Length: 397
Image 1 (cartoon, rainbow, N blue to C red):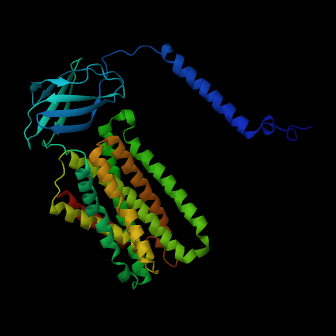
Image 2: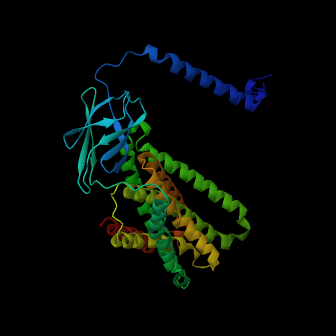
Image 3: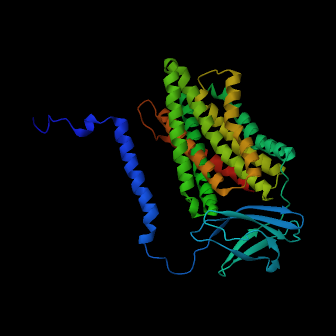
């Protein structure tokens, strides 16, 4: 019997047994490395590396509460605290904060509403870690009133604008094929702008959370996870609705766009709720109008694939809810839990979902010759980016 004809050993071993054996070997080696590997390495020389990230700041009359997390490799002991160079009494941090551990400092300080403050935390090694409060505002008390306010705000900036944008569907039904291609290209431009904007915002939040949790990798992991989940959802929808090809493709694409925008609005709502909770967001008419104009274009993006169909009103309401309602949930969560790492992950999820949707729309941009980037598509892409940029200026104004 030749070597080619001889059956391999692995061919006679069941697959499950082979997988378990490999995993067991990997686990044993990793456990041995964790248990004994550190003892073989030399001790680190030099001063300790101390890093703290501020997870939440709560202001109440006569007190400032700061939740900190140790994102460095060494324990951190907070010895003294100063507010605007004035020593203040505080409670908390009686013991060193271990790596990835957290503690809450209660500062007794008569802050004045609207004034900026710099909180300086002096560690036992002499390192000064500073935290800036741009404008002191009393933190809203959690309760039904706050939840109701955040739900209303999420409705203003998420649900209503998306619904307004979807009202253009009757007009789009009379559009020619070239106009539809331009609108789909405009949709891609809108989504691309949202993805880039959310990615930069997520990277900024990830820096706040410290490198211990992965830093910018939080955004990338969230994006990769969402991309894979959205791809799986698309394949599942394709498998169940393959028999109604023509009618289904447009509705499925509209649903995928709505899901992608909804995940983005979840992260957007989270940022809005967090900003309001710390007094960094002024809820005024200008802000509401700015978000309305900015997010109305999202409704246009959802109905663009439905120009040759007449979906029932219930389907349109469902699509609007999928895209806009997550802003309500995000605002409520953001007001209750100001966590930079969580916000970075959710923004990354929105980025990944939007990228997956863009890959779904792109084939529909080709003309009858198969060409993708013709003047119609390029004009639509540029218009989409320009519209999102200009309406975004109203939000930041």
